[in-house]
Length: 232
Image (cartoon, rainbow, N blue to C red):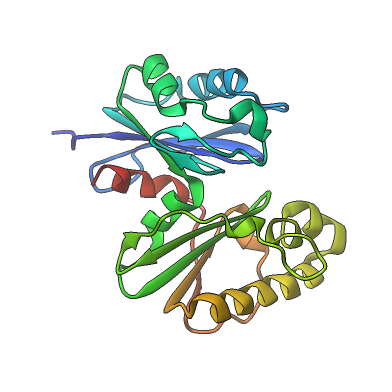
């Protein structure tokens, strides 16, 4: 008998759109599919791209979406990678429910990755390295209200988002970028005194630091497999 319910998990990234179908335990039942994120990406274009992306995937009962911005009650508050003005207050959950015919829940993408990564003990921080910096904070496994740490000023380099974003990685090279990642980890350790930090996202594969015991690299797939926990 096929485990039920099945969850369509979608990860919206600044450079790529990814999706897969998960069983009731959060395991992929099919290889993920991926396409480049359209540019520009206003809501109508993004929704159309997502509908096309998931078309070849097997049947599912519900949908979880990770979005790179602030999301409240299924509506987009900010979309720094796609244009805040055109996305502000867009009802992404309702629109995807209408297009896919299934119940939909939407959360910040780092929050979703965190749901797939954290162990539920103490203060746990998740940082995702991709087009920019994503963040999620948990206390004893409970997701805290979302804070856009990426938009905080950091020294003379603008924001955390700019300091370790993909554009800077390509500009300054892997070695200098890793030194910046190390400084970001130290800054968050001072700010939050975390018990564990999980580093994920597409650019986590470029991290070559000798990480301390309380800092862990996690697979990018957590950004999809965490989708089941949106329904728990």
